[in-house]
Length: 82
Image (cartoon, one colour):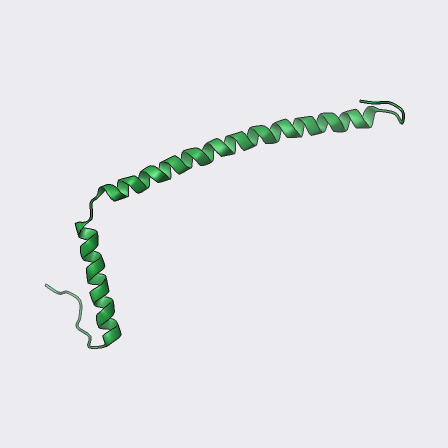
């Protein structure tokens, strides 16, 4: 039941043997390997989301403080302090 054509070039023969071996290994592997990869993707997505939210909060806090300092500086005179 070999559906692939036969070619008599050494490079093509090597490639065909390699691909057959890879296909056989994939068919014999445990299916839980894919589930583990999905778990890592989900965990990574959660971590990236948490980091993004924390960065957003810190960015807003710093922007508010910088605006406050800028307002304070613009309202002072030459001899005054904030």
